[in-house]
Length: 476
Image (cartoon, rainbow, N blue to C red; front, top):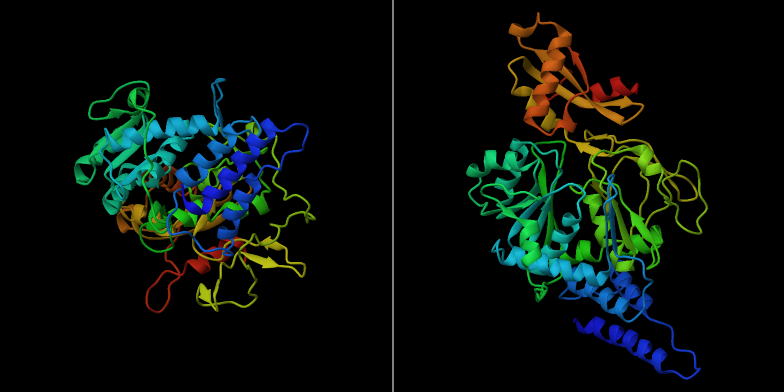
């Protein structure tokens, strides 16, 4: 254990023994709060980041020890359910045991070494959280992805990342098989299933046979932890790397101060496992000793979500209806009322999404860039335009967001047709183009609205002016 944590954990264990052996004398208060405060101080920049840090070893295993010593309520660390009534509950101790077994699968059958990369493309199954922790224990860099990735998406991500392994479920395995020959770095394929598939290792079978003994690798704070592919306004999705400490410690303060999580709380994050917000289920809840609750939810179902007990208001803060709330520490978020040409200016990142009132409360105004946010899915317009360009009917296109009462925004494509298709039936051609985009890229990116136009607004240099199309859609 790291020296900066050892004395705190030992103090907690001594307090536990003192309580058991005391004769009517009040025992000292338990000190999990002191340990969390240490992580929080690092998260806030008030204490130096340690040279070495590993979330599995320095957070999860510490909570396992505190749990064993009676310094945590008996609620689980992980709680998973589905619509059929299946349920899994793991304490921190059981989570440690299962993740060490998973780590032996990655390092054994898969042959992964520290620094190797692995794609995780799984729905909300317990194995996603298990393998995420196993990646930390082995020093494997995890690359999460949404389950709606197409063959083209998978090939691009596997080739760009040079991932050596991928783990997925039955539904996505055929897509991986279709492109795996074009991904020379891919060495092993893990299947989360109760059945077998040629060319794949069955993760559940290997997990049952794996040893519970595993020595966590020693990772430096700046060593890579995860890579996410993020949609942008130009080109293909870009890789963004996060370190052991930037994610492993970076969310502690948010979980404690914004969501007010404690070791008695249960935290439910409904985001898809492929998105960066899924990191909240790991790096804000578990450092605070909270239980992560997961409902499998194959599809977002508002009725199911609303039928479970949810609280999202920070404790003790005055609530302004409709406001996003105040800035979460350690960030100094400010509003810039003037239009800016660059995203970074004077030490601030200008998002252009919100305004701040005189009391410091932020109010969401909508994105002013080209990225489309539809039902919380971020969609880059270039990805859709590139997919459309592969169809012979499309001469050129401009893709922007369009208001929608249910999804907030949807994808709308303004399309200039090639002469050969100019006389085709618009409704039939719209359906054909929508199905084409669904096949070429992830289905959630297809344009729900299509307009055929004779020309697109452009700059003098010939660049399509999406801002004019967007203003037209939003009435600005």
